[in-house]
Length: 297
Image (tube, rainbow, N blue to C red; front, side):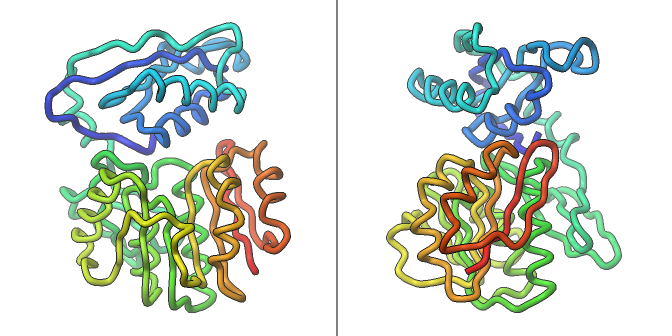
């Protein structure tokens, strides 16, 4: 689970989804990307056949009926819902103690060869590793989910092999990718997100890493940007990645690199088809059903 959070009034919305056991991790990642604070499976995934359906409980600060229908459509299209089952009705529940318990689960995390992701309350260090401080808040991206790890590893590899002068992080969430790019030497970094709550969390994390003046954050839509970037990251989901393929390709400078994440393995070919041409795939990595791609102009 890559996202956790607190809620000040102690009340949450719980929705149960019946999903194939083999898809539970992927479904949880998709739900988190759509605003879930966290997910939990009823029962033990190790018991019973992987093709069986399990109930996956997702917890939200708030969730409208239209938002729930949109999530259901996306999950159904991705094969993450048992077709004979509907999501359980939304339930209002009272905080059973998560406000402090979630902190115990967010432990320092080593990623790649050089990164160490830590929460603000940790003083952990590791020789040769760069400390990145992330307060999860209400935004996606602590490094614990395969989509974020894949993007972070791609950034590390790219920045180790060449220098980038101007980078863009689309759908920045917690700001972790933007922070990593700047700490790895990118001179100018812009982080954008249409969710103002996510930008507040990104702004907090940027300050925790003493990068207030080094990263520009904005709610501007990517199609309104007029400049070109030599490194772009977009760790979102397949549908929006395909929808913005033309504008992302147009925003990538000559010889630039585009890191795409949040792609289910079985959707990777469709995503690539939207970008090629004019871009070509130069690197692909997969982890637990999720694909990260690096494209080049």
